[in-house]
Image (spheres, rainbow, N blue to C red):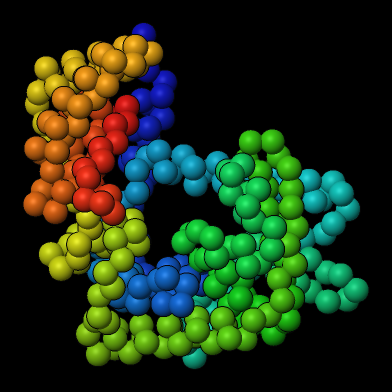
Length: 304
């Protein structure tokens, strides 16, 4: 039988490629601004080491494609509502700082033109973001803050609009953004620092933030000097996996489950490093663990 899913995934994989980057892209600068939790070194790599950028997965590409479709639908909905969106995908170039970008569109209200950015989100993030400050809650939503701030500066306007869409049910949410000169200056400063390092063929200092670094597409360039957490080990032990199976099967029988859990916990503890940290895969289970404030080892089991 034809495997339709595999066929689509294979096509997506073939279409994922790297492109040269000769400017500071407004859509990415938020990843580099230190006050937004960003890394300037990544910004330099984007310009100088783009050939070594880790490619995203076909599954991630499907998410990107769905976001583009969601945006197209919002634009159609706005048109049906009689709201004209002009200058869709207008290109920006701020030569002084080598910043480029393109905005989703612009809307006119009372004779003033406002930049418009359309963002589709999963339900949990959609529910959390109700003000501009709420974009600070996630690293990737902070990137949106820098992006729209730069568009406002390049358009010389003091307001812009985010139109958010819940991917699951199509609900929409509008957030009016006021120009934040301080944030704008931080974005410009980041671009200036990156430009200087590119010109001088130097690199900014590394950061050491495990949560940021482990998701960076350039982490393999920095890996030797960055602590990305406890290395993952694969443990080939069918009997250990069996004990975990039995523990979950008998979890309603308190005494037996407790005995099994103590055996499982001790075996996990024996696999931990000298600091008591654990990150292993046993068959279909992932087991992580660390010491609590009292020094007791606490494992956690997840089904993969």
